[in-house]
Length: 216
Image (cartoon, rainbow, N blue to C red; front, top):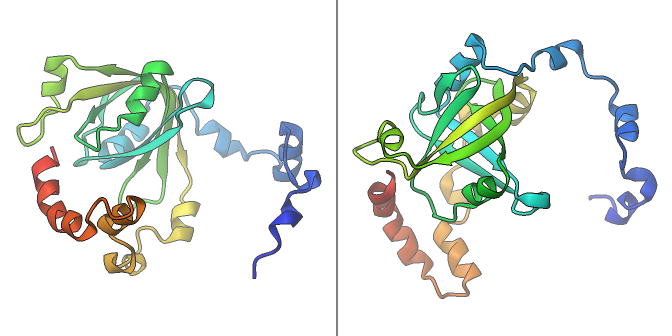
C-alpha cells in the first residue's frame, strides 16, 4: 500500500534550492564531470553514428510547449558534419511538429542517443535550426523520399550517461519484452478518447498498411 500522498506535501520534504539539493546528493564524481566536453570527439562520434534512435527534447519560450519526441532510422542517419555539428532528417510523422514549433521560437535542444544492446547513452545539449534546403534534404533521401526538413544542431556540450538505468530496466533483455496484446491498441485508445467518434477496430485494421504507405 502506498503511503498517504499528503505526507509528501510538507515544505520540509520539498527541495527548493540548489544548496538543499547538493546537501542530499553530495558532489559529482570526478569522471562524471570530466566526461562532458564541448565538441564531438572520435569516440563520441562512433556512438552517434551507431545509433538508430534519438530522443529530441525542446522547450518553447518561458517553458511553454515542452516536447520530447523519438526519431529513428537505420544507424548512421544522424550525420556528424564536424566536431560541433550534427544533422537529423525530419521524417514523416503525425504532423503535429511540436518540436519544430519550439525550435522556431527557442533554439535550445537536447538529444539522447540509444543503441540497441549498449548500456551507455550519449547526450548532446545545444541549439538547432531547421533547414528546408532542397539539396540538403535530398541527401537524406530514403526509399526515394526526402525528409521535409533537416535539423542542424550545434553542439554546446556532449557526454555519455552510465548504463545503470538501462541495466536496472533490463531494456535490452529479450526476456523483458512485453507482448503487444497486453496493452491497449492505439485504436482502442482513440475510440475511448473520442467517445466512439473513431472506430478503434477499423483504425487498427488499417494501421499496418498505413505504416507501409507513410513510413517515408
